[in-house]
Image (tube, rainbow, N blue to C red; front, side, top):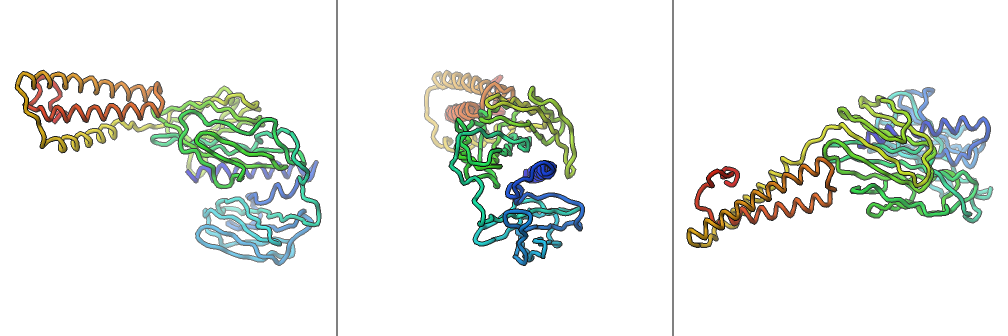
Length: 408
């Protein structure tokens, strides 16, 4: 799960930094927006990480100041040189690390990223220039935010569910904090389970059940909201309809390809397959998606292992326990009443089995949601336990023409 996120996050951050550098030809970006963003380069030795420490602007290097690389079970410290750079050459390749520095009581920390195996990484840590007014110090005004073009939806099918990761970059292009006209709140798709904020998200992000909210005001620049959740993946297919509360500047969806996995959406105008670290992925892109417009996604064709064998095994284990519990307390009734009661119980048992099979088929076909399926299955298994216990207490031998072997 973490490998796909590392790949996607690093590629997204590289594109973001490249875009900022291209924009510098026309307008110098705020260095704070680039602070802590790792950028792969080929002008460093393989595996090297270079951290530049500045105060406020690129002209203000902070020299002879300690910078740390933390992660992979170790910590390394190097002082910055006359150009404000600290270079680390002995970081464990592939380890998840981050750069850290403390300047005048201000804690600076980069995003976590995998240490490179080939080429190097450059990044900046930007301390606040206290000699200048803080950007965005004006009161929050009414204004719109968008979900920036570097946002991604990442999907990873597994045996029994499909994991979703929303990597949202909420963008405020103005120079002051803004409050959107309506709260930044949305509901995850029906059936979503285990929703949680991911590391690296803004503290403004809140997740309660299936409700996601990002509290305003939004500072100038970027506010990151990253959410993970899972949907039942029975039958090798899952459908999602997601509405977001702000305009998505450019739609990007990445799906890990397992077997014959496919991605379909009326909002995606192009798709292509790509390889990364020996894995295959489907990358889809689409144009702007307006706020409130439903994003419709269908992921299908991935291998799915039915839960029926496990369900039957659990059911039989429960029946064995029930039989043992009732084995010592068999009531005595006359043969005629015993035969009539046994016939009624056998009919009841066959009906419950048919209902259980029908429920499993409905689940595989997507005709019943997860909550209703779990409740109904529990009800049927409990009823079957009672029937088998009653049959055992009235047992007079095998049932002619019935499932005697199974009952035994």
